[in-house]
Amino acid sequence: MFIVFKILLALAAGIVLGNLALRILSKGLRQSLFTWISTSSRGRRASTAKTPPRSLSPETKVPNNGPSPVAYKDIFPPSSRECLAKAAATVSVAQKEKLKGLEVSQVEFQKSVIPWTAKYEECGPSTYTPMEISMEEVKALGDFPNYAELSGVPLPEEYEAFDIEKAKPRPYRPFRWAYHQTMSLTKLETNWWLEVESDYRTRIAERQSLYAEHGKKVLDYLPGSELACKELMEMSLQFLCARYPRYFSLSHTLSTGHVFHNRILETDTIINSVHPLHVLLNNVPEDFAIMLRNPDDGYYYFRAGVICSSIGWNVNTKLGLQLKEIHAPIPDYREKMEFSMDRYFSKLPPSRPIQRGSWGLEIDKPLFMPPGDPREEHRATQSPTVPLSRIHLRVDWQTLRRLPLSGAIIFNFKALFTPVTEFRDEAYIPALVAKLLKEGKENLMRYKGSWHVEHVVLPAVQEWMEEQVQRGLVERGWEERTLEESPWFPGWEEKWHRQQGF
Image (cartoon, rainbow, N blue to C red):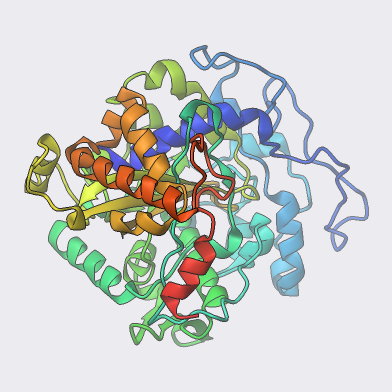
């Protein structure tokens, strides 16, 4: 099973349904924020035949299986220049002098986009990222710039009630019925982009062990991904420090540069001495795939990643591939999903990250299963002896966002495991799971790979359905549907707080 890129496929299905609801860009008047450069107000460049609008266009209806009306080579993501103007307020006078105005010459920009495999440190000052940010400006911003202003996504609020010894993940239950009529994409909850729980130490140790054993199968990067890797790492550390300030902090000295202090692991990381993806591996219990725009064709390719929870594939087997190549084994992807996925990636702005969840049922807690792993044999049979206690819900809680400087698209997710026995007191969840297992579309359920445990789970949830009716948790005759509380369930917060002791 191609778990992570199955997730992208599911994401595409939501995009097809949700395209009309997503409004990516404001069409309001633009106000110049670079008053220290110019007093005239200048807006973003107007669209031309060679420069399609930097927005999703709900009015343009193109069949999913139809050809693209324009060449993606000519489509650039929404510009970051206005956000750069806001971030300029927090930099020194010397840095401001190296920042350009609100607009840049489109002729200069399109002629000077950074080459596909170039290292940004070695590029000339007038080389541009796809976000219309020059290398001179990237370097002027320095390390750990104000990514909240640059992206338009605020830093999280401090999680004051957080206790690393008791913290549990929120009980995600992303069950939907019926699949074909429910939009599964939602705006990212900015406080919850990266989550830390009581198993943090164990999870980080597991990731480090996987890298020690498998190397480039779980972490690798290609030339040209340097800026995106650095940017993602810096954004992630800024998030952790803002969300969990009792446990994470950054310091800076002239002799060492920036140092990340992890009070949970009791480690100090000199940032400039470690590759950014290794900083993430050693401190952030999430998986990241970095997709970069190829200036030769405008399509997005998997260029770097740290992924420790793939099943049936690994970083090494997918690195360097275009989206459609990654999805080549998926039935109907080319006919039904390819256009929408490519279009969405080309237009996603940094200010609109999204989230969604994918689920499956597993025996035990398989995190990383490369091709040929002996545990794959579990999926081929329905063992009559497997106990219910060994079966877990696996939720891959995912986000998708664009980085404001490099223009990379970051797909990150975290695999969360919950014993299915937890469903017993969760209102409506047993009924939804039973409905999915009994009546879910055969190809979708086969794709999820839960068949090997259905013979154990289905009788259990059917029993719990009746229990919940008898207890008054669910009304008799309730018609299965996606819950208003989705991806959770009624009373989830009370249960979650109770499990954490508050």
